[in-house]
Length: 505
Image 1: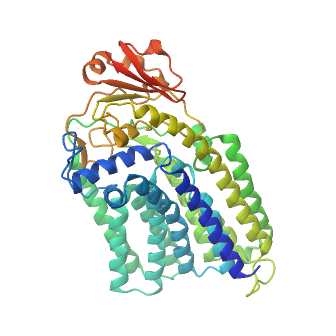
Image 2: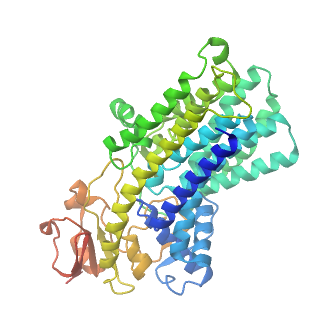
Image 3: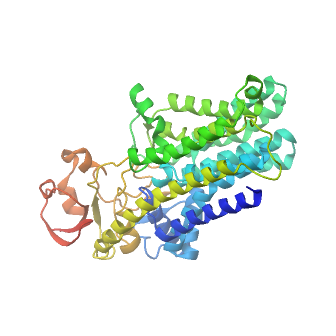
């Protein structure tokens, strides 16, 4: 297969993914509606002086994680409208990883065949569990990790003040996107610095300079950003490391999305691809003990180690340890493909079976996504039909009744469409009041809301129904639900197979 044909095949695959994301937008991806609702509110507060939401929410510019993504997304909402912004942001998030992978591979001098194979695999990794959970800022920050490592590679090749300034600016942008990425960059640079200084491939003073911007943003976060918390803010999570059994079970967490068995089929296609590529490599010591092989594999071991030592959740953050697993498949694949090929590579033609198998694996993944996106799209149409019956600017208590499927609580934040469509007030938007990292965004007067998953966890005793009856005008409940667990008098305003809207009497 010619290089031009392989590139064309990859371009078609990317266009197919983009078309799917456009067609099904706004995507019902667990947390995404919540972020979209906040972006719509911020667009009003920033550009329209709070004409619609100024009585209920407030914004104060703070240099903290998530602020960069929120400013960009709210600007997109203002310029392009909600629906277009929702699609554009999903597409940009999806494309960020393949773009970062390409930049990183270019700095490493990877061959065309290796680059194309890894790019096909990046389409799968870009639509992992965190993507379908709507953790878009985190996904963008993972792309920034690879860009930062590419920038470090360029600095090690030729040091200059301009490049170092670009690297420092990139670290600041990464911090303003997501804090976890700063920890990943620091760990990766530290591990590679030890490796390179030990082999005399880098100077120790230059390696120390690389940590200056990282240390600066961490000091800022630990000294200044923590002061943005207010006494009444909720504690988002309890400290929880997990058990040895749970750590082992979650090793595949990032690749299990909607359904473990169905995802296993998708994972199997990529394992077949890896087996085929591995069979065409030379597994001899002289080929394996090289920096091109050992460095990416060392990164993979490093991130697995971070996964082991990090907690699963703690105050203001959850899914902490499994975030470290996101880059592991990428570095394992890169290390595998960095082994010398069993036959001399052709300068004009690529391995056609490998390219076709990689493209097929990407298509299998896309088909899997389309299957679930279609189901979620049909459900969302029904749900928003119920939302349309909510009087504008009402106070609504959402009740999520669905259990987890795969790693997802798929409809947990679907009620954010009540904010988007009807400008309703709900108590569950990510904000400083709710113990979320977005300290710059707060309610003026947050309505009462019990724990968001009280229904699935059967924490009925934690619900103060007197407060619900006093502060909430409507209940928006996903189906099916047990009416006996709703302990206040209500009347049904509207219902269908997706949800019911109950007026509080």
